[in-house]
Length: 194
Image (cartoon, rainbow, N blue to C red; front, side, top):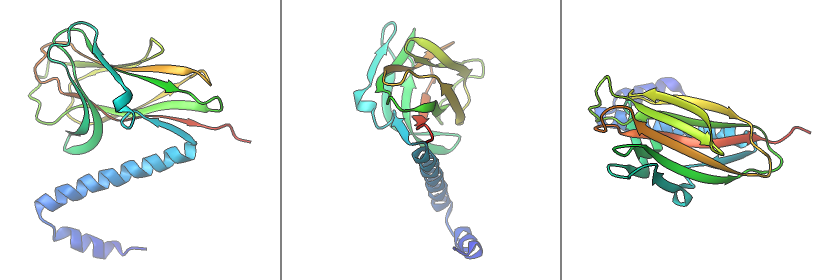
């Protein structure tokens, strides 16, 4: 067991820059521990890890759309994320086909949404975030908050199916500064108890 008093003494001696790095590392360790919970769930699918297999498109013209996978910072906290700056009109769509094991139960989608730090988004400008599974909208939220908002969406998935997941973002006002991001999106499920 680590002596927390000694650890705190050492932390207090760090520079401001090192403290910022430490906070990022703590966030990473928390994420790893949450993934440890996922391991107990028996099955998971990381949309970050599968990004290269995603289909990316705009529902109208792609002008102004910027989709990529990178670390994103919201509220000063860095997380692996899908950047999803919507196009000038219509939705940006990040689409995945996920094979669902035939033995799972109690599936849910875990993620966080936010507007990346540095965006000068106005208070009356919103981004619509949405999730569709097999063409059906299962979740949505409108926000312009520059911090991570955690979400867990319970899902009823057909076992043994190939499920289509779509993460959508759309500007509900001005296109400027709508730096939307999806942090750590992950599908988790349990195996039936014997």
